Length: 118
Picture (cartoon, rainbow, N blue to C red):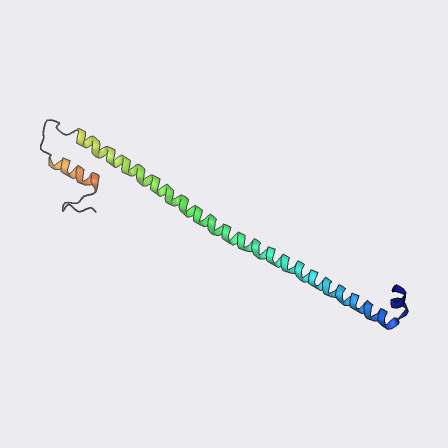
């Protein structure tokens, strides 16, 4: 059969052309695939960098908020200790609360004069 193909020039030319076209199509497909993969990888890299910068920014904001919360807690603790010390210094024999005691309780529990919370 190989002899028949090689002997028939038209058949050989058609077969060579078919092989060349198939090779060109395969090469074109491979080039497109490689290009598509490289574009996808680059897109993924850019998207990852963008998302990482958003995460870093949000992390910095969260760190600042945590620091503020810790500072506010420390301030609150100091104020509560001051109010507790003032309450301990009151006359322990008096069962009627004085104006200072009521004020300290209001400050301690965040209640204004009308009984509503601030």
